[in-house]
Image 1 (tube, helix red, strand yellow):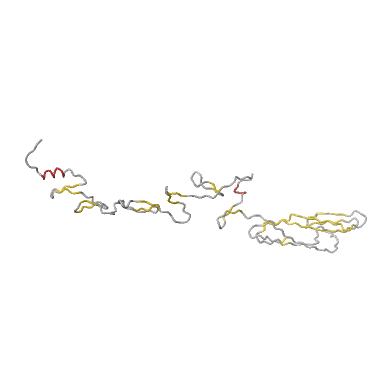
Image 2 (spheres, rainbow, N blue to C red):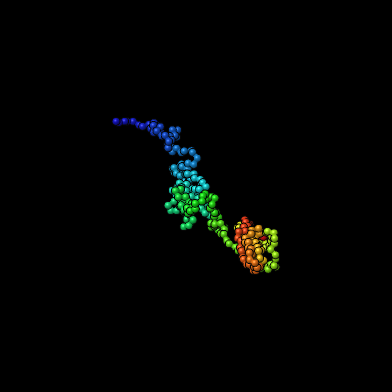
Amino acid sequence: MSATGSFDCEAVQDCVGAGFVQGLQYDDAANQFRARLDPAPGNNLQQSAAGLFVPTGAATVSVADSSCIDMSGNGAGGSPITAAPILNAAAGNLISCTPTGLRAALTLATCGLSGDGSAAAPLAAKVAAWPYPCTPVDTFAGNVYCDSTGTLRSEPRATFNAQQNSANTQVAATAVPAAIDTPVDTRTLVVTNPDTCRTAYVLCSQELDVDLVLPSNAGAAYGFGTDEMVYHSNRGSTTETDFHVQVMKVGQFIGPLAPGGTPTWR
């Protein structure tokens, strides 16, 4: 194909400019091709006398921090966008940023705990099996408590305390009373619970030393309170002198006795 004659420049411009869609535009009146700039906010592309350019350090991306992520950078070559975790500085926070990622390291002692804190092995108190036939544990087991240092403690240990009140009383020779359960001597004992924490239960014992002089065909009984413990009679034809016996009674019970309590036992 061959052509002769002159070309119409305007016609060529109109033909080429009709094909511009997005990045370029054709100004038919000025007979110019221009770059088309997007007017949307945040577009940093500019057109100067020397050509198109983006200013160094211009923010081409908008970033914002959250409560857990610290965003920085603007996407430029010298300022890449980065996101760093924000770690709570409060004592006891186990999460940390390691070279391989975020990690919450849980260090366990060798005693008192089982499990590793995972969903498959949650932390739990390491306890032995209940070895007693009585159930349920809720009713029969004791309790544990946390002290001021965070150490587990058991209930207060049981202790034993002995108190004594004795006297050597010489009772004048007294005729055996005719009436039963007639008191010959009376003693009292003030029992004090010395503990400042635990309730006490008191078991009392009492001892009696008796000498009897019994004429022929006479008899006598003795004991504690209304509890007759010994009866002895003289069936001989002469007086029996110095019939001697020591008796003890255990079982007087006082309780519960509050810490510092001082009941009187008679």
